[in-house]
View 1 (tube, protein in one colour):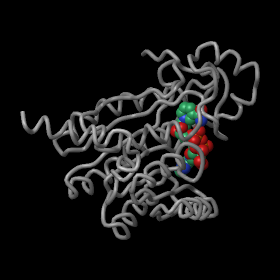
View 2 (cartoon, protein in one colour; view 1 turned 180 degrees about the vertical axis):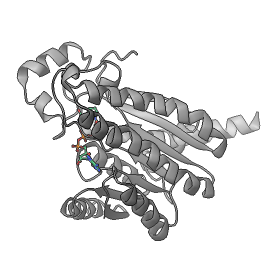
View 3 (cartoon, protein in one colour; view 1 turned 180 degrees about the horizontal axis):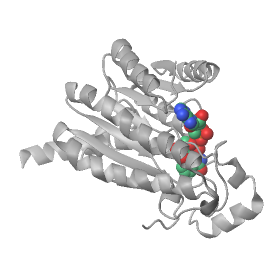
Length: 273
Ligand SMILES: NC(=O)c1ccc[n+]([C@@H]2O[C@H](COP(=O)([O-])OP(=O)(O)OC[C@H]3O[C@@H](n4cnc5c(N)ncnc54)[C@H](O)[C@@H]3O)[C@@H](O)[C@H]2O)c1
């Protein structure tokens, strides 16, 4: 009883003190893939502003350098490296470098994705499927396999996959991409019970239409956007920071009893499988 009173006092004293919750990832090390732009960069910033040391990566060195200096400008502890998540040697180097330079891994945000194909799903080729599944699904799992032993050494961790609203309702011209995003919903649920005994939580975010380069073909087309807006409660595009904040929440102790879940960040689109 006394404990309860004490806890609610602490909670009410802390209510509204944003700085307290922003420092809640101090001492944690976070790997975020494809984090030099868009949602990945916003996630890295949100984690970094809450005190985590973030390891940013993407395929191009100049983009990595730009992201590192941008985040350093926000006084975030950051390390950068190139990583093509579709290549096993790159995944291994990313994790090894993080452990050597930052002392371990507590958080993985698997954000990288490709979509090399627009059209009817029946016209998609084996090559398209291999590329999409390798980058969007297999790399998420294979990176998980690499970080889990490191998280176990630290007593636990948190993994977040970046899916999409298309994982719930396939977007007509993006069939294979949509299916890859549905696979991440399943991967989240398959991993969560297996990793819970190691104190590792596995969750997922499913963004709607967010203003990034990746989705420009959608939001730059007024006709498509008008159709989209009919399905939204909040009738505007989402911003990357609005996804980054949810990712940071899932990685924090505030979400300590949340695992195997996907949070949709869509402005109120109906998402059902
Ligand atoms: N923007 C949206 O509306 C939206 C909606 C739903 C889901 N998403 C998802 O959010 C994530 C981030 O997308 P974004 O919108 O920020 O766009 P983005 O273009 O900034 O992010 C995708 C990134 O993945 C990188 N990438 C592709 N292949 C890679 C590889 N083999 N190795 C490493 N990096 C690779 C790209 O270079 C790119 O930087 C993706 O998983 C995407 O599917 C985005």
